[in-house]
Image 1 (cartoon, rainbow, N blue to C red):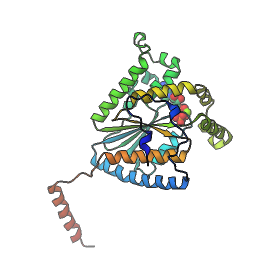
Image 2: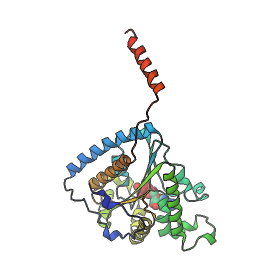
Image 3: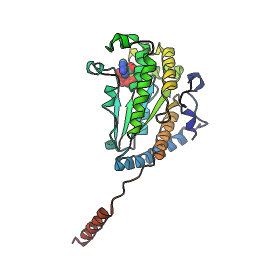
Image 4: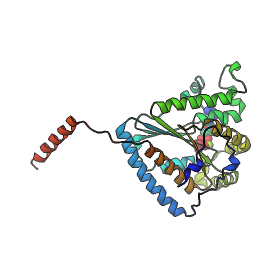
Length: 289
Ligand code: ATP
Ligand code: MG
């Protein structure tokens, strides 16, 4: 599957109009896609077990998107086969007063995956270049000293983020980032569906429609995020998200490939331990039933 097409090369100006939200790389058949997803989910479970046993590396998956693009569903489906002990999900909503008393990376750092684990960020520090940029009143509430708030602040935040992600990668955390790229029309359809179906009402709030009113500003902010913060070590993938069956399959494929490239290995036990295990085996076999 040619998901490399979705990977953003470092230091390129990204234009979202060049990324088709309904692209399926030629896949037409939802059932075939679900079959492939199921296989990748199985493979992911195997790789996660090795990651956990080896206890050296960790993987951080970040998800960003406009509302109703399918972040929650993608996380749920892709991680469905993974042992919950080896995986931790953190969702970032509006920051607390305590969060605001710290630098903007602080609240997310507390949720970084331990060695051997897969960490998932449902939203992340990238909100600091998105919602905060689109709504200047949020920035005002952040208590940053006024002289530090200049028109360079978004580029500076991008630098802080890329520096920090580099630090993570140097310490054994592989970072990959997904932007689920839904179209404006598809978002409207999904909102209407959430309103029409009472069991989906909880997913929708009137403020989601207000955010939709800022669509173009968000697209511009996303373009800067993608252009400024995709690196070789911590790449962005722009995943077409108008078809949920496709976006889930694509995300699972990329996660599996990333883990495979990490060249994970079960830890080898030393000769002494191996001999001790063989002794144990003898004892077990000698037990009377
Ligand atoms: P989602 O929309 O991700 O499925 P949700 O609807 O359950 O989640 P919301 O209550 O919409 O959750 O919370 C997410 C909101 O928090 C978003 O509007 C997001 O922009 C906002 N948010 C996240 N991080 C920040 C931040 N650093 N500063 C301000 N607002 C933020
Ligand atoms: Mg929401």
